[in-house]
Length: 214
Image (cartoon, rainbow, N blue to C red; front, side):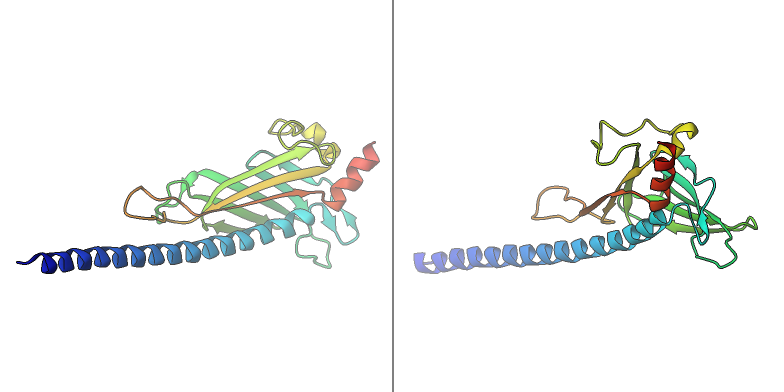
């Protein structure tokens, strides 16, 4: 076999490997973009529900509920609200709880947990929503002042009930991850696509309670 033919085979082999690597990179990039959009959409759906509920904390058509808060923990919050704005002024108890003990076996992400939203009606019936959309972190901070340091000024949890009327602001952090890892290249274990949402809340009815106590 002459040298020219050998050289041609080598060049062809190099080109083939380059094409394969390029195609793999394109496929991986496309998968990452798709999973990123998928994760962001999940995050948007959950954060919208949380925001709507928290802002209605203590709400009733003819005034605020009494009491407002029932549980204030780092991974669980329970409060009263006429959440459906019913004309009979019936008040529901709303619970948001991150269940670290409930793994989602259908997900390849071992950090996936269930986020519960529970609405308890006055007749004792409950509407339970199990959110299984890749939630890996749900954390709540409680504050008696506005705009304080997230880490330094938050109250220790669970918050003592005697402090409920002094609360003015909440900080909620939510993390959502993809159900499986995205692998870039031929080596490495890959990584989960992550979307983080953080927000401070100052529910109007809670502000009024805190102001009246000052």
